[in-house]
Image (tube, rainbow, N blue to C red):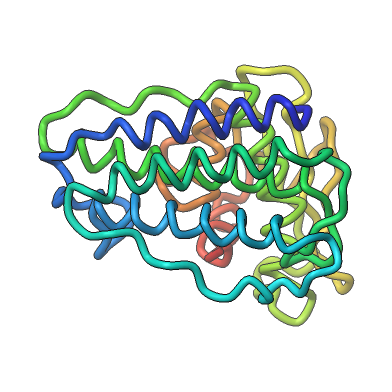
Length: 251
């Protein structure tokens, strides 16, 4: 996906989150123990505020230079405050070129890095919120687009997983093993994950692994983010390797 597409995804998914029903704010998120819809909204809005302040501080700023953002209000006002935080973040991102420098938790990066990261941040949390609403009788969550979900799997693998499992934290059961991920509903949604002495390496494209995990891009994304069980996907080969990956990827 392009940065413009990430920005549009952030807008679309953010507005979906902002539109959650106020009467469901106390509903619990089934897949995130201890979280409610209100906590999802307040957490995501606070992250938006932090990223906006980070970008406003300039490319040479320290990542923590913006300080801790103000928390969103509790209760019904959190939805209005979330929408404001989203709009302020969108305005800050669009005020800069995507390739302008920006500090990130992965080292020096760009404004485009944050457009992508925030798009996928809000997409997964929007599913959390919609799951909570569904659990109390609301509609099933609207789907993340296949292209967006596939891009989310790519980001999860190349950015989040690689950082979460450096060489010294790879579980013994994964050493020397490979996992093939295959999104079945969009082109070019295949990855081979290798777990070795250099850490996790990610290769795009079709390849044979010790285990293959297949499903729609959204199913893959939500399973890797521990929002759906591995059993919801097709697994071929050594299923224990795939399960160990999901268990270890606590990001």
